[in-house]
Length: 454
Ligand code: MEV
Image (cartoon, rainbow, N blue to C red; front, side, top):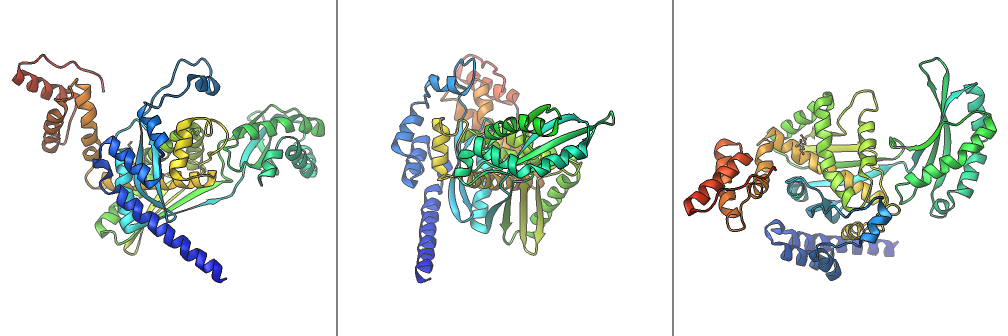
């Protein structure tokens, strides 16, 4: 008993020390140049010297590897990858790698996480462990007879699937757990049957293994029932494994808390707003999925389907006041893996998991949900106070400046002028950038800028 308590105290102390070191390293992180940022991440133990060499070399990845990932390879698409800072999730500090093309997502996530680090808390959990596979029988002659046959032999079917296909999963504590039969009435009045196979994929996303399990069961089901299977495929609507994140922000200014609650209510009631709200949540999730080599289309499909599960498309987040606190909830399936697919093959996916110190799919799923919810908070806060343009366009100015064709020495001057215009007019465009650059060059007797679409 005493040993357990001592261990717990040691763990808490280690965790506090880690958080302290983490806070120190991320003080002013965004103001550092890239070399200094990389040094900080080495200091924190998030990156190794080898990682830094790899990143500095422009991350060249063997083209042979691409041939293993996809077909008709012509090269790689290099996407920018950055880190979101200040995230403390379930009391563990995280450096969050995010591969994304949109400006301001990382800055906004880090800024919100800083607010939460100082005045809040992020907690996460997962309900359920099974993913779903579907075996469709487009028309069955006698649905009730079909159903009772399957249910009568369900244990045997599960046993066979686990023995023949799911052996590896069973060894790791997973495997097929259940088989259910669903009925769908067809427009022509006939009966369609769908067999749902539930399996725990452990740390894999599970698409491949589930498809194999379903295809293995197809002839068995046909033989057993004398009915014809039409198709077998996993379902991305995994309401059997749902990730939840909860954020509590303490002592929120009442006016701000009310605005955020009202902003959230808009997304709860209106599908037009819910779509944009959920896109904002995915701004926090997709970049982590990409950085870790996960199938973001599957997660997107699952989240959107879950958002519409009661017949109306709704927000997957809710913000409510609770006394002086503001409480936010995220609830949706975030089905991903840390083994299988390209996760263990792609060097950046491996590095990203290492940076977060993540070894299980469940932890990665929880981190995604937490970052998605924090990103959502940042967006609603901005939208209901200063508006979206300020944060967004300030960072977009750099792109506009480059898009207008500014050279290295001209960039800071053009940026500064554009910031002034933004402050005055609350609007900024590529046209402004070109005009500012033209004036600058005219004043120096240089040639006019060339427009590049941004
Ligand atoms: C833009 O990428 C995301 C937002 O539109 C999200 C939202 O409206 O909540 C700002």
